[in-house]
Amino acid sequence: MSDSNTTDFTNPSTFILLGIPGLEVAHLWISIPFSAMYTIAVLRNFSIVFIVKREPSLHEPMYYFLCMLAVTDLILSKSILPKTLSIFWFNSREIDFSACLTMYFIHCFAGMGSAIFVDVALDHYMAIYHPLKHSTILTNPVVAKIGRAMVLRSSIFVLLYPILARQWTYCRITIIPHTYCEHMAIMKQACANIRVSIYYGLFLIVSGMGPDMLFITVSYIQILRAIFSHPRKDSWLKTFGTCISHLCAILTFYVPALFSFLRQRFGCNVSLYFHVLMANMCLLVPPMLNPIIYGVRTKQIRDRLLWLFTHKGI
Image (cartoon, rainbow, N blue to C red):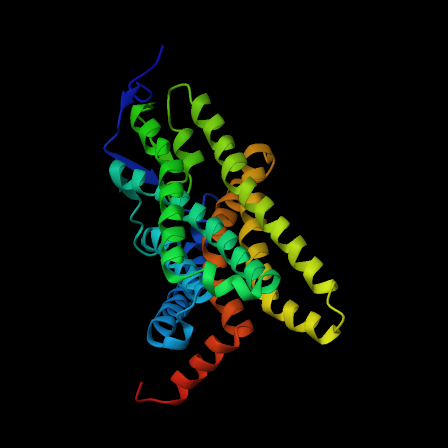
């Protein structure tokens, strides 16, 4: 028999976010590196967008894709940090049910980030394997269509998440041991059969990130074939220099994401505070590192950044 505390009901008015369970006394100290990462992510990603917009010589597919990645990273970091910091600083733990569901769009923008890496791989493949056709195939209208298709795919993929969440019945005690409304954390609050949602999450990984990773792998196999078929070794180094930033960004994005996915499904012995910390890192570290990686490895962006810092009139 269920008591008054566990009676099922649909759509609670609010959820209670606990922050990082087990590390409540350290919330204030944890907020310092979180704030630093968030600030770096916002400033550097905004700089990428600003530079590409202002510099006509950067109005090319590669830099448009970098702008898309920067905007995606800005939204990802902004979607969790303000609420997380309000928990750490002001003990503001309540979040409205509808506001909690809007955080499902974290998955949407994560999917867009994965698609952008595929687009950049395509750009590198065309530039290296078919250099004469690159500018005629990847035109600005084509890039715009790719961007729209990327947004449409990611939006459709995650659409079922909030629909399912609204259909579930929830236990009266709706306490989420997390800093934001993670999908798995919300599922655990439901007093209903969530098997469909679990299978759907697996389907998204297999049908979304799986093909993306496969396409990126095939693209770079073709790129390596083109590199090693060239007799001049100096061209090898130049091509590796062109692709190394993309490869670093891919590792920064996919490795934490896959680790988080495997930990949620199979890491039963992992402590809860470690799980929450890693879930935050997955959404903070890539937005912070991506503009640093591209800013250091992409000469045009690096030179423009230096020029902006040394000319106060801009």
